[in-house]
Structures are given as structure tokens and as C-alpha cells.
Image (cartoon, rainbow, N blue to C red; front, side, top):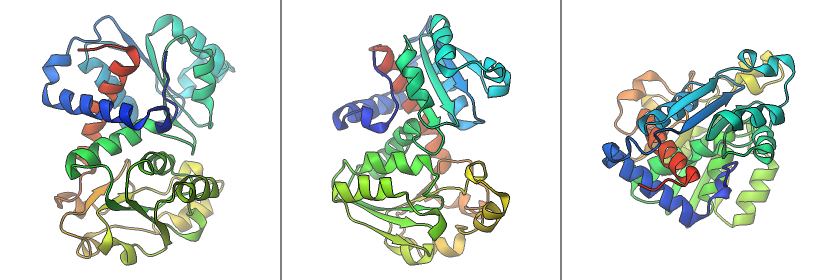
Length: 305
């Protein structure tokens, strides 16, 4: 039995097979529409979510399976003090596979150690978000035609942004990826990712504060929101939340083929006027998330179509 806690749980070869499967699902959805009949996915979301939870549910329903679970800790026995370990033991009696989001780093890993069904980390605090990374990789490969040989700008909350941490870990395994880390001083990439992942990999990277200074050279711009839920006080959040706003003026500085990605939800960091720019692919990115989660469910359940 295999779990997914981090993008590094999959080798590059396994990642490529998973992305190939996701592309085949996109091209031939009817071929997979009954492949999970009789199977159940449990979505255990201790933290609010729209895209991740609903895309997991859509993925399982598209495969002909069914879904059960909860969408907040308040609506689960966690509100009575039940541990993650006990919850997953119970859920293992009811479902065939589980997706868990939790505000505490490492909670899905703890669950996986006690589970008798595959557990997918659907986001744990500011640590990892591997299925968003799979979505990002599928989006980049599908729209750029390759993984590697590009310059990517990561902009916004790089300190607490689990999507950024996971994406960096995945991309350093591909050739000639150059990283531009765009953030205010207070939200810089943590040392364990900068030193332990980027420096260790030998991939080229540099840090910038101004988006305008970086955008002309980018093949990909990955925007992130400043996350209110990760701040210890409201003052700091209010001071930082509008530090970056991507608008049509800044887009004029970008290359004609630069793509703008965002894990969503957005707040103010991308102006709605950018939505009509063909380089803005964040809504298409959300659709790719369904295909890649379908592929992941099939892979972890060992179902071949």
C-alpha cells in the first residue's frame, strides 16, 4: 500500500506515468467513468477548502465511485477531542482511500502510519500540498510541452506557502529550472527550503523584492496569496496582504508566451482584469487538478484501465 505525503514520494518516472495517465483521462474521460465503481473516497478536511475538496470529490465521482467525509473539524469528532490516529482507524473501516487536509504539519503522515487504506496529504499547515504540485506539473507540461528548461518566478507568500514548498521540491528534479523568488523580506522562503532544497540541488536561483524587476525574464509566473490564517497577528497580515498586485500594466512587461499560474483562492494579488489575458491559466489549472487527482486515485488503488 502506498500513501502520498510529499511530491518526493513519487520518483520522476512515476510522476511521468501519473501525468501521462491524467492526459489520457482528459482525452478519453468515458474510458474511465466506471473504473472505481464500488469504491469510496473519504475526504477528511479539518481546514476550509473549495478547490481541493471538491476536485477530489469530482475526481472520484467521475471515476464512478462515491464520496463520504466532512468539510470542517467542527463537524467531526475532532471537536470532541478525537485524535487523528483514531479517526483514520475508523475511516479505514468505511472507505477505500482517504484525502486529508489538516492545519498541523505532519498530521496526514501520522494518519498514514495508522491507516489500512491509502492516505493522500491534501495540505498540512504550511508544510506540503503534493496534489496541488501534481496539478501544477500537469498544467506546465500540458501547456508548455515540457518540465525543465524554463525560468519560473514564485511570487508572494513564500514563507508559509505550502504550494510553493512542494513545487520547488518537485521542480528541482528536472533539468535547467531557474527560480526567481519574489517576496518581501518578511515572507522569504524558509532556510530549510532555500538551503536544504534549492542550494543542495545546484539549481540556479535568486531573490527579488520587486515583481517588475523579475517579470520580463520569466517563462512562468506562480502567484500566491498572503495567507491570513498563517499569521499570528492581524496587523502583520494587513501590512503585507497587498504587497503584490499583478495587473495589466505589469503584464505588459512580460513575455508573450509567459503563463500565469495560481493555486487559488486569490484575494487581491491578481487583478480581475488579468483574467481575460490568454496567458492567465489559473482557471484551466483548476480543471487539470481534477484529471490529476483521478489519475492519483487510480494509481494508489492499483486500478488499471
